Image 1 (cartoon, helix red, strand yellow):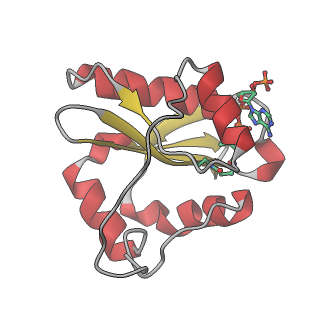
Image 2: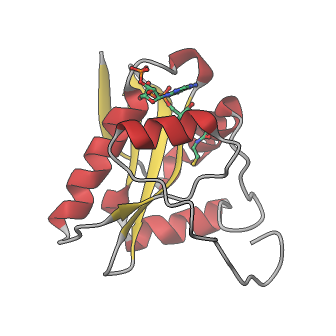
Length: 143
Ligand SMILES: CC(C)(COP(=O)(O)OP(=O)(O)OC[C@H]1O[C@@H](n2cnc3c(N)ncnc32)[C@H](O)[C@@H]1OP(=O)(O)O)[C@@H](O)C(=O)NCCC(=O)NCCS
C-alpha cells in the first residue's frame, strides 16, 4: 500500500506540501529553501526519504550525520495519514541507513510542546534528556 523511497529535488514542492499539511514550521528562505534542500540532497542523497501512497508523498524524513551521531530532522506525515505507523517506519528506515554509515547514536531535537513527536520517539526507544539545553548561533532568524 505504501513505499518508502529516496527524495529528489523534483519532489521539493511535495515535501513542502507535507510540512504545511502536518503543520510543521519550515524556513523557506533559509535551510528549507529549494536551493538549500538541493545542496543538502547532493551531499547526502540517501538520507532524504519519503513515504508514498500511490504517487502521493505523504511523509518526509531528513537524516543528517556529522561522523559522530546521526540526526533525524523534519519528520512529518500528512494529517490524513497520521496514526498509521508511517513515522515509525520512516524512523526505522532512517536508522537503518545511518547504521550502514557506521553510526551508533541516533538523535532528534523536539520542542517541549510537541507531545505527538515526544511520544513517537520515546515509543521508538529514544530516551528523553531533561538535563540538556539546546543552544545555537545563527546568521539570522531566517536560516
Ligand atoms: C509526529 C508525527 C510525525 C507522527 O507521525 P505518525 O505517522 O502519525 O506516527 P505513527 O503513526 O508512526 O505513531 C507511532 C507512535 O507515536 C505515538 N504518537 C504519534 N502521534 C501521536 C499523537 N498525536 N499523540 C500521542 N502519541 C502519538 C504513538 O505512540 C504512536 O503509536 P500508536 O499509534 O500505536 O499509539 C506527526 O504527528 C506529524 O507529522 N506531526 C507534525 C510534524 C512534527 O511535529 N514533526 C516532528 C518534528 S520534531
